[in-house]
Length: 250
Image (cartoon, rainbow, N blue to C red; front, top):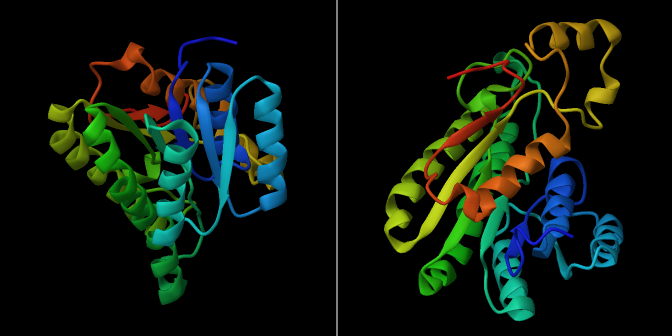
């Protein structure tokens, strides 16, 4: 086990599968103590045991990330288990593919609550403890859809991720003098359960738009999260880092 994140007490939301799970496993591999989160308790229990089998400490909180009580329980669990909160990874999120004219009003509310308001809630619960420590790291999972229009995502998804980018910059500006670094990660096309459902024609279309000619993996994103949580990124603040094989550059 690497000691890059040794002694780092980290919360990772939406970590029972996909990118969040990859981040949690990568953090554990590098020595972090974890509080993982999701809505599937069975999956969380399995991941907790996998992480503990790697020699890392791990607890979990199950609940709707769009509810303030879930954010409160995440912070309380981390403090109770490890006595501090060093890193918060706001990874939990959802997507949908409605055209604007077909978008239900309820979907707009659901998307912003899950993708954006949830990050505000977790930061509200975690930041006071980081201020007491005079140190901390917040990593917000955004998307290239928050920087430019995406043809295959609902408008509310892009708006929620643009909000994450703005939240990241404002928090970074306000909290940096207290030793708290805030950054975002903007993944492009990543190999997930959803991508397994693509037709061969659509997959080829996606590949052709990526200069590296491959999809990203959860590990590609997790490696950037590890870097941002570590002292290797000690002078990086307020950035929204693209992880997309060159599909979108800015």
